[in-house]
Image (cartoon, rainbow, N blue to C red; front, side):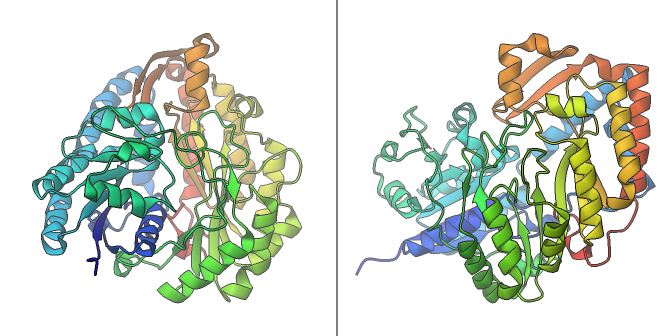
Length: 491
């Protein structure tokens, strides 16, 4: 009788307060392939981790410093950013200690690492530990879909291969080959330390037969609330935003949707497994496929009675977007408790430059309708996109002031040029389009860009930015709408 093989999956993505969906798919694929799988989340002890929270005066003061663009402050920003980068990317000794302990206790046949790009030092340490035991190490993560990124990482000592492919149906065979020392260059999306690579990985054509993600082994006892992560599809039905890397190199690739019945079957099974009816949909755009979006609304309560859910939508201005007042009312009755959308800017001119495909008029109507339906609304906004002026910031401030009563949170972020985005392509081919943008550099190991935006130092721009941040503070200092508290910080 053949002895059962085992795999240890180390999740280095654990900054959320729910299981990592991608790792759940990995575990499910391996277990269906006959593997004994253990999941380790060594960063779980960093809880409580929240992407955002109700602001106090200190939070506001921190944002004023973080977004400051005075020439003297920019130099301080550079020094602080360098120190933070070194701190974040350090090899946390807890990660190595917990992984070494698990390796000694479990003696796995293979080690699989799922990592964000901040964790290069940790990956190197874990690969060294595994190499000392003769255990093959496979590294994966959506960022490695970009060949330039994979090339920067594949030389880590002790690494067997980087896998940049959707392996929902092929992972057991890939791990078998790694354990037996077979030629991995025959597998799509594989990068090898000797420079060889497999054929280009193609996106899965159909998501109908995806396995149900397996979240056994995750630290459920550490989560403040039990929330099931799920996706109704992969990619984005819009896919044109210039600043977004998700639609190009992360989980975008191409847009594919799942049948609503398959999604509801999965949620019903997960609810039974893990004893919760709260769900977070991680889709880039939950309303990409209107048939699936409406199917979830129609069927959620029948499958998870009393359940609640949250997700992110795109308020597309052309055609139907599934976000009419009647549909939002129906979604609220189906358990939709919080909804997030990308405002990014209140300036239609900047909206067009970003290729958002939205309009301030349509977003204004959406906000009023979602609030009237009883849904807690969160918006994201970007500061410093090239071409932005003080007048554009003032338009964003006016938009937020006008709609403040409809918003529970506004998540502000600085524009960051990311390799692989449409912005990257545009800048490389037509840098003259981006007046005031200088010193642009691309770091493929971390898949980030750095730059200077000269106009952001103008006094008029800085004053307009201060007015905008004051308005955001007025919104974010409030508590969430009653009933949405359990989802605070999850988006």
